[in-house]
Length: 526
Image 1: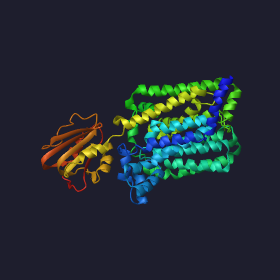
Image 2: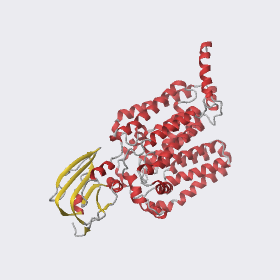
Image 3: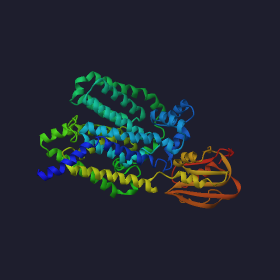
Image 4: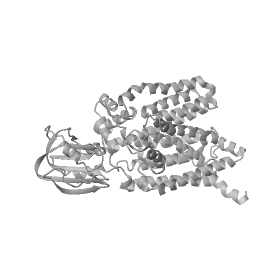
């Protein structure tokens, strides 16, 4: 290196050394908070979110837990937190989504520490950056459901596993046992990630194998928690999951990488955007693998023993770190896929969201290994910027957002008191949330109404727009960000059966019929 080059780089190194080590983490955590909190109430509740305050949360905690057993398919931890949040902050959209947002923000420093454990500071920065802006993780950080907490708990379990694997002390093993148990109490699919961690602790050469008895004792704790959950699993019985089997298996497989690349709602962006993000990730990983494979042994050892130039010790080599992340990710994704062949088909891509943490860690440590230099950093920055652009686009584009049932409720708000509303199943709970007092019309009942409102989404039935019953005429038709509203009115109240209303739902989907609580219904048959 020339004297001029040395003089140029020395001040830059001194400036870097003068900055605190944690400033990138602080900046990325603030970015994650801005993405999640600033638009937390932007989108309407969709069915699953609205279902919780409408059907699950009760003033009594015991009643809430009974509802979890009757109506849900997840362990109780998230519902306990959501119940406490609801009791303190109320049932508004921001209030009910806040636990998920805070969990999503907290996942960023956990991802940083995972990256540090696996490969050092550069991998830590990229892992935290990708978690902060990934559109799938941002999406579930803004949803009043279990998935944001699931990601956090699985990430904490992975972090504590890595520390226990490196140094299997009593404290590290106890922390892993506790976080693994919390992950299981959050989502049943945590078991697959824990299987990968357990296999590594028991079978891989390393410090943990020398302390087999304490390791097995730590693994026994989440195993006991899992056994304790079996009665709840049996009570829940997988009800409400029939839609999974109706979704073609090949499409679900394709959705797994698509979700990670462009988010839960990224399909309208098209395969071109998916391909561009995939090329950035694939190019960065390929470049990192090439640099790792081509680096001399001495360089590889230095990369494993120095934390990005800070002089802090690194816990393990790049190859070992990559193998650990790969095993956990593979167990979390491939085991649920394999179980489909044995009739246990619960392979909804969103149930794999926590497996995206080891996937992200693997990408981070391969894209910017310590030997990769500026090109690896450029690849990492490109991936993060692509994720960020998609996440911002979701906030700007209604076509990428959840169905705007809030907007539909606003359109319906000016309707008559004596009316019936037909909708698709996914619209039932949101309309009940945004229009308190609505309830399902009983089968076989008849109501007397002067207005019938029909709501749904494309594709519409051929009969959409026609009067659902004699004497009614179309008075209004609205499109609310893709959700369709037809309003039919009659000059005098007319008796209409539940069967007639159900048959006339405008969408090819399971129908719901809602009526105001004060509307009298009779059982006169269809």
